[in-house]
Amino acid sequence: MFTGIIEQLGTIKSIEKEGENIHFTLVAEFTQELKIDQSVAHNGCCLTVVQLDENQYTVTAIQETLIKTNLSEWKVGTKVNLERCMVMNGRLDGHIVQGHVDTTAKCIGVENKDGSWKFTFDYSSNDVTVEKGSITINGTSLTVVDSKENQFSVHIIPYTYEFTNFHQLEIGSTVNLEFDIIGKYVAKMMR
Picture 1 (cartoon, rainbow, N blue to C red):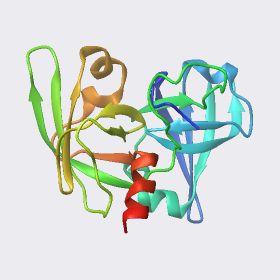
Picture 2: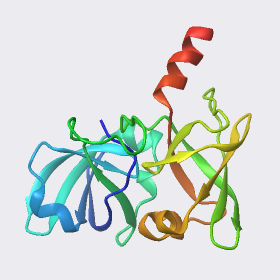
Picture 3: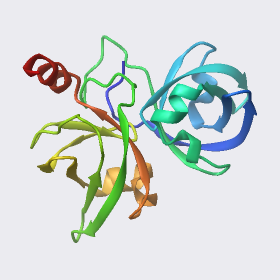
C-alpha cells in the first residue's frame, strides 16, 4: 500500500531481459534502507526488490506488468518516480494507492500556467475519473480537473514538477494510471 507521495527519483542503470521477464537495476538514494522482498512503487507500479548492491537495487517485471504499464519504454538513464510502501502508523498525505497500474494514458496537452502546469491525458479503458477526485499518474497522487469520458487534466505545482518526473513529460509521453480504489468499487457496484 502506498500514498502517491513520491520520495525521490531513481535512475535506471541497467536492463536485462530473461525470458519474458525484465530485470531493472536502479540507483536511488534510499537503496541502503531497502531490503530484499520489499515493495517499492516505480512510476506507480509495485515491484519487489530482488537484489541489493551498495547504492543500486534490482526489481523484476513480468510480462503482465510490461503489457499494462509504461515499463517497456524505460531505457538506461530513465528517471523513475519512487515510493516505498506506507508505514501504517504514519500520515496518509496522498490517497490510498495500491501500486496496481490499471492502464496507461497518453499526454495530449501541457500548458504552462505561469507558476504551475496543466497536463491533459487521454486513455482508453472503462475506468472513470471524477472532478476533484483522486488519480495516480506515474505513482503521483493528484486531483482530477476537467474530467471527461476517457480524458482528464491535472494541475501540477512547482514542487511536484521539479521533484517527480513530470518535468520530463511532453505531448505523446505514456504514463501509468491507477484510478481511485473507492471509485472503482462504486463503479463496479453501479454496473
